[in-house]
Length: 223
Image (cartoon, rainbow, N blue to C red; front, side):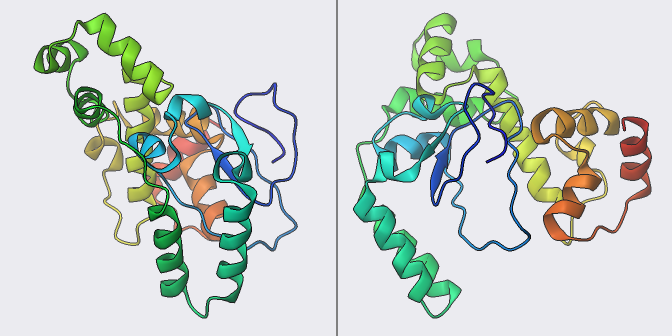
């Protein structure tokens, strides 16, 4: 990790790590060869799998052993290395993580998170649905997720757009499909949250990119 979302964290190497939600990009460097598995966990899944709210990992990268324990991390690494194929590696991860299930978050905050992460429902509406005030809901949401509702919805929207962009059959109008104001807005969000333009991200993530004229034009405008 050459740079963390929180610049106060010192760069360092991690054989296995957990990273929380953040609003700044992290910078990862390697020598051109790396192998591993990344598991993306929803905000509510953090409590269910690790027994702690996602807010405790907000903007942080921590050694996975600090949360999972040295024995669990060692077991996962050994079994990943010896499993004969990817289906068995994924099945092993499901097995290990399923052993760790904790009590989920309460029904009100669960409902609120699912609704608010869509980004199209006002806080006041969701607060009325569960019988809380808007301020209390915002405070509880932040204590669970680590971000305010609008911030979390912004990250969720970016992630949905990123996944669509990386799909071989990605839609042409990603900015419109995911309710960005325009293509320039999408590019600015990539710069802010990923530290690069969409075309740069595709090239670095997959080693090649078939440039979309619209994406490329807007990328160059903001270079």
